Amino acid sequence: MSQIEGVYREVIEKSEWVAIATAGPDGPHLAGCWTSYALKLGIENDEIIFPAGSYEKTAENLRHDPRVQLLFATGAVARASGQGQGCTVTGTGTLETSGPRADKAKAQFPWARGALVIKVTGLRTHLS
Ligand SMILES: Cc1cc2nc3c(=O)[nH]c(=O)nc-3n(C[C@H](O)[C@H](O)[C@H](O)COP(=O)(O)O)c2cc1C
Image (cartoon, rainbow, N blue to C red):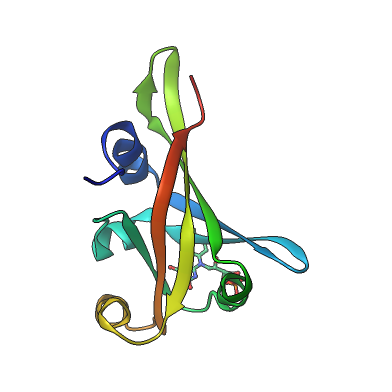
């Protein structure tokens, strides 16, 4: 069963963009993506795929340390004590420039050189 269900899926689907954090020898590194791009490629089987136009530094970091965190947030999800919620996704990432995922990313986004593939291992919300 997929972990990306319930409030986690709702936050992801209603967010506008996502921050992609990796760790490198120079310290933390952030990249971004529009959530709609990941939704277009399909979020299933605990896998999130981003079309890679560049993500050069992100890919380099992942080669040395595959751990990645994503932050999605939206004001459009209600919680017990108010409005708005965020979701951190923890997992591992690889930049694939060939294979079915890369082909799908290139077909949907002609500017893409491949797919940044995140295997999700955990999720948490930010606001109670
Ligand atoms: C909202 C937003 C959406 C973005 N979408 C993409 C995207 O889909 N693909 C991509 O390669 N870069 C995208 N970027 C740009 C990268 O985050 C940025 O160019 C990054 O610095 C390049 O990756 P690197 O620093 O790992 O080399 C986006 C940036 C933002 C702020």
